Length: 337
Image 1: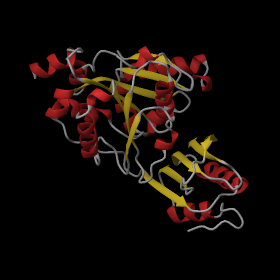
Image 2 (image 1 turned 135 degrees about the horizontal axis):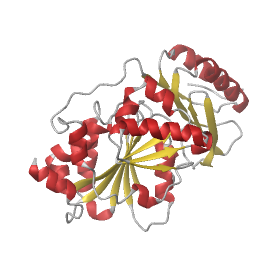
Image 3 (image 1 turned 30 degrees about the vertical axis):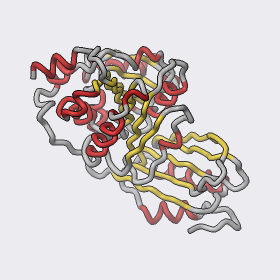
């Protein structure tokens, strides 16, 4: 234990790679913050690991085309079901650690950061070659109060944070933000809190934080290094849909608008990469409950598969019904398969 405590506070261990864990509940803005980091002029190169809850990956397409290596692991959380993928991918990266300056791990919105952080202390290989720089938790200022009432994962994400980014502050007035900060302080009294819109924070707020606070983690969770028990909120499922053939944008807008209006309370998160008839660019769709957004994100590359992908994460989801609705958005003359 003393060795671990010493390592945790020795932020300059020669040759070790700093790792930043980005966490936060579904739709909080983790990928937006990641893109902000990757597109900034900092003269550094990062390797990125993106973890998604659904069997189809979408976030990898949402990460900016930066000169970074991006790896993805899907169909489960790296805190539990695909934790082996986390160890394997990081292990492979650390064999050639001279090619980048740091690693950023973006967890799923349902991940408990404690087991992820634990990995850097109990896996001997990772402990020797990497150091956990900080757990950064992104918070959706519009939804966080409701989310804390419904989802224990959100509480864990706040409790384990070294840094908290209170994002989307343009959607919450000063009184609401004060209420949120007071609620956060009931869960985590010491983490730095930075307000942001669209993930726009100073890089020094989230990088080079000087080491994950193991002492505080042990205070919060005395069995942190030994506890392998972990579970997610029951009843939350992911449904991933894929369609060949171009979509009719008006039909899609009408369908998804109706779905979110009727079932938005149960749909915690939806996102997709879509290919519309007549469009020469990919369209990124995202929604948190009933609030939807989207934009064209870049030209379709030569030879690129144009299968539209859509992921829903939530409760009481009806796969056949969602599948039929998505298929109804196929443009006239386009062929679905």
